[in-house]
Image (tube, rainbow, N blue to C red; front, top):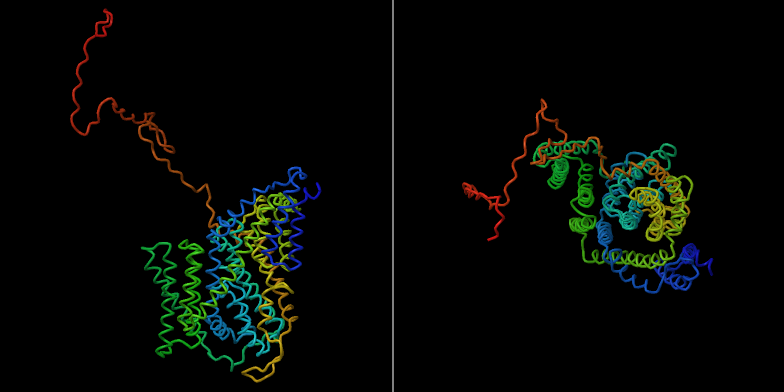
Length: 593
C-alpha cells in the first residue's frame, strides 16, 4: 500500500495512457481517471508519508475550475469558434477553388507548377482559415484530379496536398497556437508573432523539396500542357501591375508620413493595393484590356483573401485588436466575401454554425476533463514527478528540448493536437520554465511538432481527410475521357513520409535558431544607450545630478527663504505691520495675570 501511495503519479499517468489506447473518448477518459484516482488517493493518504494531498472538500474546487477563468470564462478560447466559423464560411464561399485555379494557371508553364500552386494556396488558406480539414478537403477535391489528369506521381501529389493543408497548424491564425498560448499562460498575439517566421520557413522547405524533385525526377511532375492554360499568357502584365501598385504605395507613403508617422507605410501599402484592385475590376468590367486576363484574375482573386489576412493578423500585430476581436472581424469579413461571390445562403450559415458548435463543444469537454484530471494529478504531486523526470535529462536545456520533442512526436502517432495540448503541455510547461526556456519558443516548437500528428501514418487526420475525397476506384476523366487509376491508401501514406521528415528538420532548425521565434520580443534595448534625466529639485541648494559644480569655487545659489507658516496666506496685498513686542523686565518674577 505504501509503495502504491508514494508512486500514485506514474500509476495514474500510465492508467490514462491505457484508457486512451483502449479507445475510450479522451474527455471521458480524463474525467473518469481523475475521479477514480481521487477516491483511491483519499483512502491512501495516511500511507503516503505526505506524498498525497487529497481530501474530500477539495472536490468543491471543481465548480470554480469549470466556471472560472480557465474554462467557461476564458476569453482567449473564445477565439476558437470565431476562427472556425470564418474558415468554414470561406471554404463554402469557393475561395479555395478560385485560388487553386488561378495560381495553378500562373505556375502552370513550369515543372511542378501545380505542386507550387498547392503549397502557395495552402499557406494562404492557413492564414485565412486556420482549419486543417477545410484546407485538405478543398485542395484534395480540386487539385488532386487535375494533378492525376496531367501525369503527376500519385505519392507526390497526395503528399503535397496533405502537407500543405497542415500548414494551418503553424501559420497564424492557427487554433493550435491559441490553445498552446492558453495552456502556457502566454499572449496569443506573442504566440502568433513567434510562429510567423517558422511557418514561412516551413513553407519554403516544402517548395525547395518540390524544386529538387522536379530536377531529380522531372517526369513525376510535368508542366501543364498549352491547351490547359485557359487564362493564356500575361506574366509581364502582372509584373507591370505590381510595379504600378508599388509606385502608388510609395507616393502615398511620402504624402502620409508627416501626419501619420510609423503607420504611413501600412496606410500607403493599403492605398496601393486598393488602387490596383479597382483598376483590375474596372479593366475587366469595362473591357478596356489594359491588363492581360491572367493579371486581372490574379489580382481580383488574390487581394480579397490578402485583405482578410490583414484584417485579422494585421490588426492583431499592430495592437489594434485582440485575437478574439480579430477572429470576430474575420468572421464578418468571411461572410462579406461569401456574399460578394453570391454564395452566402442560410444553408451555408447553418452548416458553418453546426460545425463550429461541434468543434467548440469538443474542445470544451476535453478541457473540462483535463481540469478534473489535473486536480487529482497535482494532489498526488504529479507535477513534481514530471519536473524531476524531465529536468534530470542529460544535456540541460537542449537535452530537455530534444527529449520532449521525441516524446511528443511518438505520442502524436496516437493522439491529436487537442489531446496533446490539454494533457501533455500542462505537464511540460513548469519544467521548461524552471530551465529558463522561453515559453513562446517552447510553444512554437511544440506547435511544429504537433503538426506532424496530422501527417503520421497510419493515424494522421490529414491523411484520413485526403483518403475521404481521393478516388478509390478507376474513373473516366471528364475532360480527356481517359481512365484514371485510383489512389491507394499506401500511396497516400508513402507520400506523407518525406514531408514528415521535412517537419522534423524544421523542429531541429527551430531549436538551433531560436531567434526565428524570439523576434516576437522586438529589438532589444541596450541599457548603455539609455539617457537618464533627473529633474532639478527646487529649494535644495544642490546642483542637479550630472551637472558640474559652480565655477571658480563659487557656491550654488541660495535656496529661497521658507515662508512663514504662522501667518495667513498673502495674495498680493502689502503685509500688515507686526505690533512691537512689549519689553519684559527680567528682574521681576513672571506674572500670570
